[in-house]
Image (tube, rainbow, N blue to C red):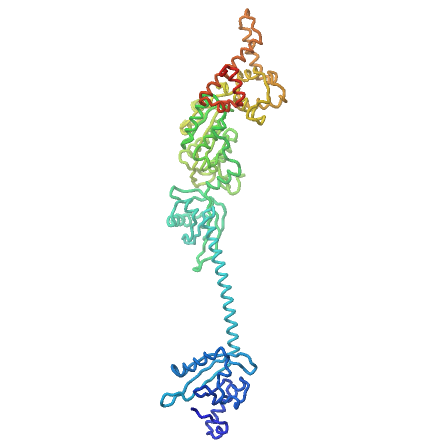
Length: 614
């Protein structure tokens, strides 16, 4: 047991000891001495002031009376540790101060032993760290809150970065990020699929584009920081160069200080398709829109369908109004290019000095009045689809050379430009002229003629397919009445015979116009010969008059007899047509009636009239 030293005994100490004790009393830290059973044998003034008790009140009292109850076991463990493990140790505990508040005290404790190794005393020096502890806790809390905010901001940035990455990966345009040395840092899926090229090959090609061409927009971007939009460029692919529109802008430098740029790539083929979709450059008609019962025309349709399956050039000959563009659109819509554009150009309607720029396009400043930035030609707009050159026989001779070169090389150079642009176009030509005769006259190049005339056919004029005249008349009249079968329009049978005898130099287009005229002048009344315009009626009257003049006078043939004869011929023709259609449709009356553009009931009525059925 350690002897408790009364204060009266301290006065008997030597001067040196008094000075030592005086220093301890004046310390702001707490100093205590305790017996092995944790009873105070000494406390300094600072500790007394903290607890709010005098020396006399504290001497002999146990320290655990003043420690916060939740830390008592911790204190006992601390005492056991300096007793059994380390004689000197530090610990932090909560105590109750004189105001009854919890305070944090940091202690350095030491155990003293006798010669037998038994504990004879504990000494401790402590200090109040409540303010520091609160400041540290506040700081730690702020750090924790800030850490959570940073982590949340980091997560948001990571999520945003992930979203942007997904957008770049899946956007409809090709995108790549490149540095000033030509290294590609990012390449999205669309560009890979469009170019069919590896990143390594693209880097090599871009290096040549950037550093091998002083006029390269990408070089101007990376070296001078000049951004650009929708500039024409050719990018390499597995299948050759692909024409594209590219736009470039700078992004922040990376950690190594390298300048980087993001390039957006739109394949010209896709841009052209988008433009054509909005401008209506699409084929509207199919072979189902070609109305005919004429065997020769059906043979042409069969042949044209076969042509649609390949990619060769096609030449369609025929008079104006026979439906050459109708066939061209039908071929396009039946071919593998049906999802691509259909661009029609009337070579005879464009001034000879403009046809070159219209077909092949031009660059910025190519000529006075040229559109800023240049303009793609019809060949470029038709990329991936069909270019229909109507009235090819009217193309100026000097432009035929350029057309031949484009067809042979499948590449073109815009007027005023130097860059060769690859094209993917099928060419269908049409003309009302005899190109072979024009070639022999020197008006059409021989080499171009044979290049265009790979596959060809001629559409017969309407006058050579009389069966279609009445068939088309009823078809057009049905469209005007808004019904499949024009049962609301009445007309004399002889009127149909007059239409059939007319030469129709304007072909189907003229017949359609005449049908529309008759529809509007009928006003619900029966159509007669007098309803027809004079240019159609006069030839019919002349023929009728000749028939009367040459007829046998003794037979007393009258105009009525002639009309009856003509009506009989019409009935005979209808009967032959109906029998043919029944045979083609294997006796199916509904299909046969549909082919004649009449109702099934009308078809049955005519079968009874013509004694096809009883």
